Length: 320
Image: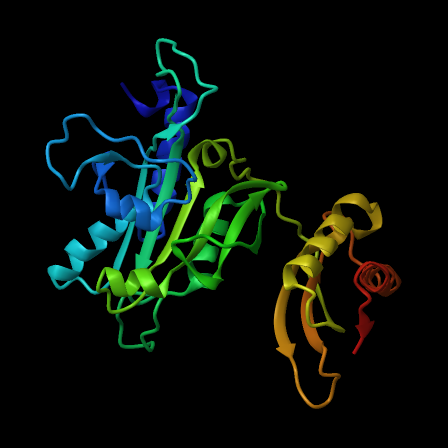
């Protein structure tokens, strides 16, 4: 059976695996049954886990409702073998009580078996090298990995509380407004419980959403010159960078005149004496390009004015 002959879902999972391997993650396979204490540490499920009637060992007594706990065990095994940098992922089913599930050829009554994708990153963000200082992997490194996995689609993130994650360093992951999983740093309590020198970054996603994502499609490259404009605005401190970026992206999609916007990147944030205590300055670099024609100054200024007007109306921003 070749990949080309395989079902679409299998081919899609192969693409997911290839992408994660390219991002320096290694795939692992773990038992579907785990220790009850491990399940309690990392589960976000309200119900009781499913206990095995005749477990092969006391440490493998319940069916897991999450995958990240098993990845933490993989991490501990690697650390015991002097591996200081670990990046692993697993694609597998979890097992949850669900009274709405009926018996069929592929299902068990009252038991849901959703497919999940989970990952763990620990240690340095990049392999050790002479030309760069070593820095631990953080929330934004793994967030970037997920964004690369879903490209060209855009993920959004919102604050979230997960019992296994550090308060304030955890977010739910949304695709087209639908929650598909979470990402966060391990809770300090669990770091101490599992005797880890540092807290790893964790994520767990609905695998069906990952499989259903759009794949990159090749498109023509414009021969016209790219024009760059910087936009510095002052907003309230509770305004998220993501809100500003999404507003500009939406404007590019709904306003034909703004379709020449190619990219928007945040490159500076300032909070200090020169602005109010409840405000912050944010500077964005906007790249504009037309596929067919050279952009004119009037056209560029009109688009930038439209962007600023939308930011003023929707978020109360003002030009710095």
